[in-house]
Image (cartoon, rainbow, N blue to C red):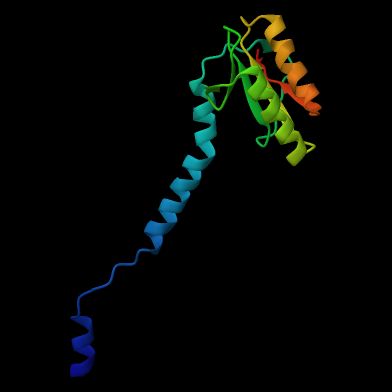
Length: 134
């Protein structure tokens, strides 16, 4: 009987970290899924409104044309020559690659057509224009 009572007086010396790891992994997944959304919202572009809109696949190349006519990829300005070579490299590595183009509603039509022409010249044909719902 003395052995049974000695076991109940022992203190807990180990910490179970499994629930902590589970919680941290869930928080990491949440941050990983929302980070692209936060990054895309950092560039201020007034998208035109459309009655019928759908979300483009997340694997698409996201290009932005701002009101000044600058082309941005991941928040960095990219020139016409660099854009053409980048899109050509993407077309060679993944022929069915999608491109999502977000253009500010104040952007000139010619700037948007110039980017669309570069996309088509590179051999990419799956292009989506992003709009915000009404």
